[in-house]
Length: 275
Image (cartoon, rainbow, N blue to C red; front, side, top):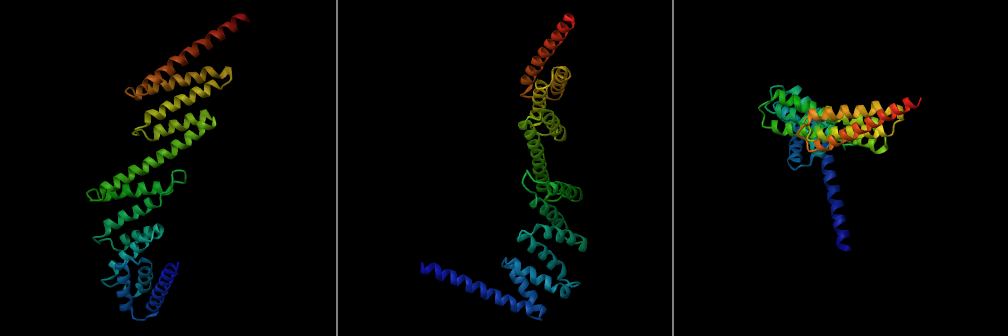
């Protein structure tokens, strides 16, 4: 127990000592000394202290040969502290302030990557995910031969998969709640919005299942047109996904629905004759 207390006291004293030392550095009027210490803190990965010192000596360094390198490290000091919002803005500003820099391509990429790091869970608003895709595509357009092009393309694919999953979950929720018409439309949107998805045929199958449920729950006078919609979707599936593993299942839905339509037609004819 005493060892733990001693260890905690040592940490507290060390932290206090570092804080006091940094406070003295910040109060110093020797900007060369501050610059040297900022570089030292950055090299030692103490990005919080480095960031504060960089910001303090900007007016002194601006316009000198050191300015570009310091601005670059200043941006990364935010990034390494996971302050992606400010890091993104600084990477953007770097490109604008140093358009001929050899680090421009890297900062262009890092700006987009900061948005990617801010991309939230699937269930949340995906503004940053969409922004990531836009900026990564712009990066690819501007730097098609970059060594980062492959990474940029992979990130775009990951973002697209996240957006696809978000749309799917929304459609699935409608289905699970029994809002089958809304589910059918939503699943259809997922299929249309992501035609290259590996699950495009599955989404189309879910459209069909949703319309079947919707027709089953409809009033009798509405069933005919709604079952006809099922047939239409089955035909569309056959045209688009002839080789799908779900083709046989869809064919069964079509056969079942055609039988239902025949029965509905016979019942309507019978009722007409009875009159």
